[in-house]
Length: 258
Ligand SMILES: [Zn+2]
Image (tube, helix red, strand yellow):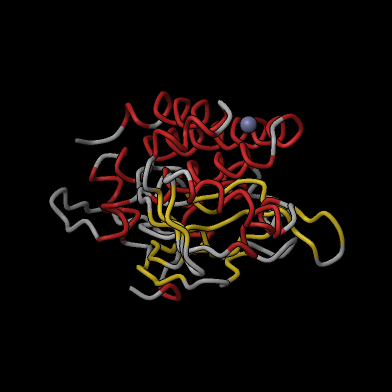
């Protein structure tokens, strides 16, 4: 079904054995809900490709769609001055894009920008149809509210981390959180983008990454960073990435379908 055909109406007949699309099969939030609810969601959704540097939501413009990522990585950034944004949190296949629409549907123009950093695939749903369907999808609503709670925790933890921990620790934290969000140790991201996301100098990013590489923790090329020794990277990071991951496991991990 094309997006334009989605009217917000929820189908009355549900096929419990309907096919689960590739994005829905990989997204952790969608893996927490019953297949009956997933079928309803898929009837109003489209599988789309998301490309690096694609802006999914512009700052203070309506959120036309919500997205559940099957793969890739999206940064949600706060505006700090005209034309300059710094990452507030990131989203991969462990989360969703469009949580503010659930919390405040009467104000669909949240003050953040959402940009694809690593390309991939996503389940895209028109926001009005999604909100209309959500009224009948109790399990999905519960999972999304738990996820929003996690985003609040993650942003407060990152705020504290940015105030107290070193650039090297913060960089290690970012790599670990991103690897968890992408469920991959291969992060196709450049030093320049990392510097912009973290709000630190590019030279500082390169210096820290070189130190990690010399210690055998990562493999570092112009276009990608590969985690080689995750345990050592965790040792180099502050406790923040571990706290974020444990909270995710506590609230979402336990709900995952086998
Ligand atoms: Zn920290």
